[in-house]
Length: 136
Image (cartoon, rainbow, N blue to C red; front, side, top):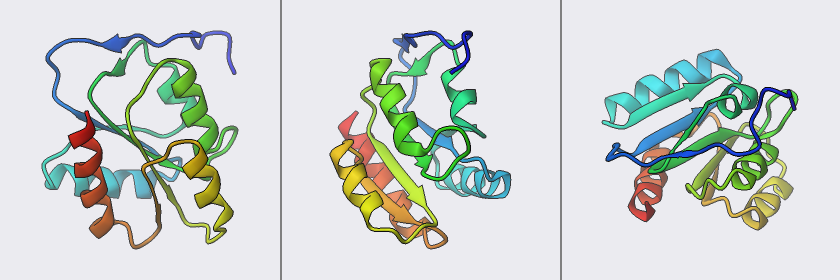
């Protein structure tokens, strides 16, 4: 990890609205998911890499993460581990195009709320984001 990434990302403690923090290295998927979720009424912050998210000076204190599993340099579960090390407790939804069911087991051990498979995301994604936002 780059030296410029802080060991601790402070949480935003204002009366902010809940954010859906979306991380996917595929720009087409990132853009279409952001568009879809904003149409559904969610406040979305999108990042094209784990590094881009981790370089932020603060993380939302309310909301959830929607993280792609397969990304360069750091997969989605590794990113979630980094976020937890920085004291973020927001619920996480993992999205993946891979069919390997061992990802589900590793995700469950990491505390992921749900693993959803691409490309059929939209129906389940809204449901699980609503569930995640009800937690925080």
